[in-house]
Amino acid sequence: MSEFSVWMGSFVAAVEVGSFSRAARMLETSQSTVSKHIAALERRLNTRLFNRTTRISVLTDEGAIFYENARRALAALDEAEASVGGLGKAEGMLRVSLPLTLAESHVIRILARFLQVHPAIEIDIRLSDHALNLVADNIDFSIRVGQLGDSQMIARKIGVARRMAVASPEYLARAGPPSTPAQLADHNCILYSLLSSGPVWSFTDGSSVNVSGNFRADNPNALRIAALSGIGIAVNARWLFEADLKSGALVEVLPDLEPTPMPIHIMLPSGRYIASRTRALIEFIAAEFANDPELN
Image (cartoon, rainbow, N blue to C red; front, side):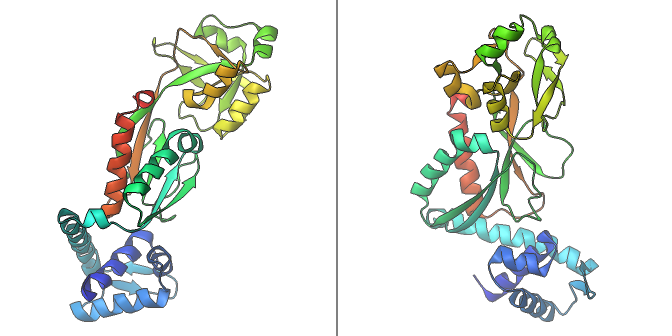
């Protein structure tokens, strides 16, 4: 990569993550190096790209115009390298945010197969069911389960999470099994606090019910343990409960009626140029999901 391209890379990183120090962490270099690169770029272009104060740096009008062109130029360089075999030699760090249980049940095994093909790539995963700030947290992309709210990010649907309602045999013996979704309103329901629909559970027959209960959590494993402990009825992805269903520790509730499946998306920051290694992993995950009947 030419010296000019390196300077552009530092500049684009600083714009996208919002500071020279964050850009330095993303590029695994020092803040002084990023500052020197951007100063050299300004001298080369004979224009000021940032208006600097003691606390912040704001793009000038010229800087905003140059950023759009620099981002496209770096993307074109990356694509050109990949087109002549660079993808086979892809290397570097990829940072990916994943929901905990989806990572454990499916994605980590997919990442293992990807690393066999691209051993020079390193992957750093952040496990969270909360939607992280991909730019501020220096994350290349995330996988999210559930309905999307308003967002400036790029979303690509890659699958669906089929869900089920479960409870322990002890709870059902005590409270009685519901025979319709409407009867869930009379049960103690274990609530997932990150569910986009809140306390409303919907089903594939078009019905929905407003549920309530005395236990809620923002982590699916906590819901599973609460159900195993006999607190009440839980709804979440099928992969979370499969082992407990086989052992008999949990029983499917309303087995002839499925809760509405949740979409699974890959999320990318809007406007950021996508490195070839990032595209390679996204396409690999998308292909693996497409071939997995549990995710379609």
